[in-house]
Image (cartoon, helix red, strand yellow):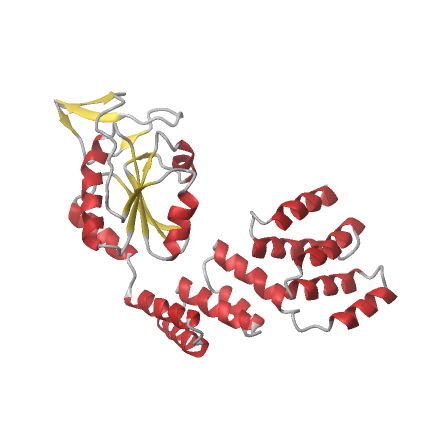
Length: 320
């Protein structure tokens, strides 16, 4: 009886359960054996066992620093027995060019479902906080190497890292020049585009940033920067002048939204949200503009921010 290692273990039913495939003669036999191999552990600093609880930090956030390869596996999966050691070997050889995160699908079924893992082993590569490529099954080592080459930083990616280092050091002109050079070679380079857009927003070139971001694939980072650009556009507005106009016209939704945007441009988010919510509750002509502006603030603050939690609930109540 031999193991058909090149095939992934496929779901045998709608339940999140996998089966191990044996070949006996010409027939394929499914077994529900629960322990085919022991849990793979490693002392390498570049290989970690990941759970649902630490996936956000260990994979999504980490992938902004270095590519992360996620191996969805299980103890009883035959092909995992072939692929796992090969991945670990290549990870050790890479010595930090990427990290390997191992996810036991039995213990983390929610993660497997989130990434639509239909069979194991499934390997997904993450960069910049998003999944960028994947494969299923126990590929031979040369094929794994070829796949990794597409995931690892290119020469342009390395220039982007230089640009980021320059920005951190305060050399903003150098950073902008490097980001622009990358975009000159590859106009849709995601990380160069978001990096340059961030610099443009910081220097008040909001329209340029929005044009640039509109050319990129839509990601959480792109949407966050778009929201920041729209909010920051009102940063230089004279608050006292708008407040005087609102005092004279307290029912003018357009003026109230203008004041809210000016406050948001100065990162005074709570009073800005109060003004926008007031417009939404009034159900006047400015309701949709106020709602969209509130969503922009939520995007900038992030889902976990207390203001997002509080005002999103109030917004929902006001709308429905």
